[in-house]
Image 1 (cartoon, rainbow, N blue to C red):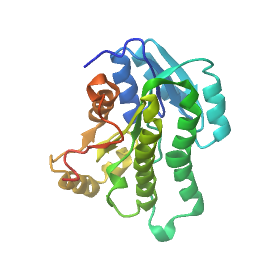
Image 2: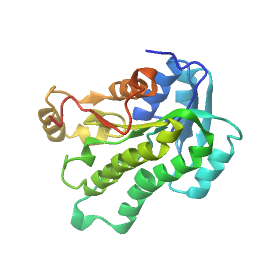
Image 3: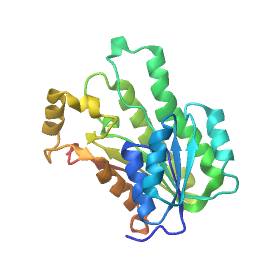
Image 4: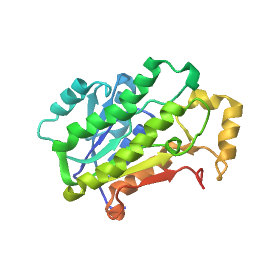
Amino acid sequence: MPSLDGQTALVTGGSRGIGKAVALTLAREGAEILLHYHRNRAAADDTAREIGRRVRLLPADLGSPSAIDAMMGSLGATKIDILVNNAGVWGGTPLGDTALETLEAMLNVNIKGMFWLTQAALPHLRDGARIVNISSVAGRLATAGGRSVYGASKAAVDAFTRNWALELAPRKIRVNAVAPGYVETDMTEDYFADQQRRENAVRRTPFGRLGNAQEVADTVLFLCSDAARWIVGQSINVSGGFLI
């Protein structure tokens, strides 16, 4: 895999879970990391220490356009080679029980926040940059009851990916998405603590186990490399065969 030496990567939601694995993986390949986080400064500090070098912490609420503008403004003339839109809210409630506040909170981060962040990042992106959006198999099919808002938000991520790929192609900016299946992270820990849920997820995955954050991060790394130079506008399943 080609080195990322001399390149700068902005990873949103990079303090834990998939975002942390992505940040560490890109850093190991030589990238300087701009590590976004929201509230958990302690986790962000831990991730920064693991990276060990070439990392800058960027706190911001991605549900707030003004916070995004302030974060991006703090970068000054910094140019970005890789943008990984990882930050997101996971969860859900049955249709009849979903409050307006729950709907808005998820859409603000998973859709609006990703849109605003990418829009604000455009002046910083080099021609030839790569954008990788973290989607989900939930954007293509129902994975569990009560996940309609989450699924809709990830379907929107896939739609953004296709349309941005077309729009940014003149600048040779490659836009793709990664769609994980059932992945075991600290965010899903409580969900998979229920043995029945865990067994159902494993049963629906042809490879017969849950995925892990590193497997997602390795796919992100591939899409950020020259080895994926002719892959544009795709959403790649990282799901152990979940959608076969």
